[in-house]
Length: 312
Image (cartoon, rainbow, N blue to C red; front, side, top):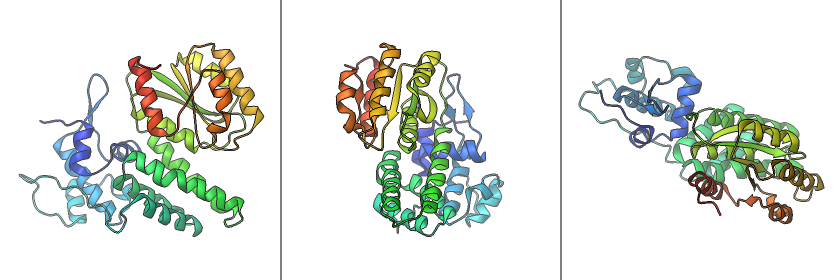
């Protein structure tokens, strides 16, 4: 029986690898075999099942309600009663009325304004199918949380809107983070935010990016003291620590925490700093020899360099 790696499954179904992992881990939609190095291998039946689930969710069905339906019931649900023998799987049709990240962003903001958590989750799941992971992060999730935060501070939204958006996005990213698995030999990275940095969405996206690049991530959550961050790095023998700094850009506590982290680690791991406000700490970042990343693509490139030993 032919087995397929996840990249082939993604190409044949039109579903992103991240979404496939979420459906597998959270809902038990498929149960792929594993290689000795823990890589997933999917059967032709798995691909057919994922195709049907993709088509059903695009038609408005909830994945949580249909993930475990028998194959024949899924076929009936999407109106595909013909035998699949000899037929090539068809990729699910992405909603053609939503063509870009900006449109998903507008719909997401509308769901937040209407306090519709279920609608927001549905839009984000569809965006994860219609967009690449990087586009999802950079064109939808990051600007969504920035806009919600700005509108809350300007009085256009209430705190309940901000809390709803935060809860849905945190759960969505948390599920994506939990969808990765790596061998024991994978390099380790600690991901968090320093003291005073309460916004964790940048850190969660960095965590997913690192996991997708082949690193084993240790996610600590937000607002962690330097001594505790260093302890996690040393205890796990991590090769790197990634810090997200979103707001504000002039907190003296952050400067002190970065200095303390550098002092405790004493060169044991690469310190990587990113986020919307990281540029405000450029002086201390340069002073301690840390690496500032401009975006998630930059983070991925830096992690690739560290993993291959080509980091300057």
